[in-house]
Length: 221
Ligand SMILES: [Zn+2]
Image (cartoon, rainbow, N blue to C red; front, side, top):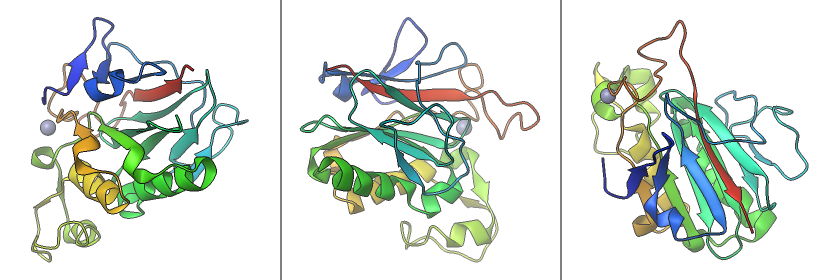
């Protein structure tokens, strides 16, 4: 794990860089605990981004939420898919993103940045991003049809052969950078949900009955 994330006594991971901003609270859950989320979506592996202002919990389908409302936490549920939290340090707008391979290929993270820009006048250069626990490339082999859809982020990777390792968090990082988020403001915890079974639920490991972890963020002031 990188040093930029810390596991709290409450069983929830937090990104150090986000902790500088005392007007928010956030967390990436584990098997032990989840941060509270007032609004989540019915997730469908899409690139739909919804503004949570005025939304009720699980009212709509989509895979990313944005808000600038004080006191309302937004969250996503994952078990191997990539949870990404975004924070606009100037306008105090936030996002919670669920990016599996389909959502990543559909560029849900880029759509979230763009909707923050249109709804809250966010400048991507003011965004901090935290990438939470998810399946890592060393645990994630995909076939050529899936691999092919990631060539735009990994142009050097050979395609057409079996057994590709897909690096979903890195694809999301490159997508965020392409959307204008500064590389030094993107933090990845580096944790793998699939092999670190003591801490995390994993869909790949337990497809019959996987639990879900919540990643959530809330503006406090
Ligand atoms: Zn792993």
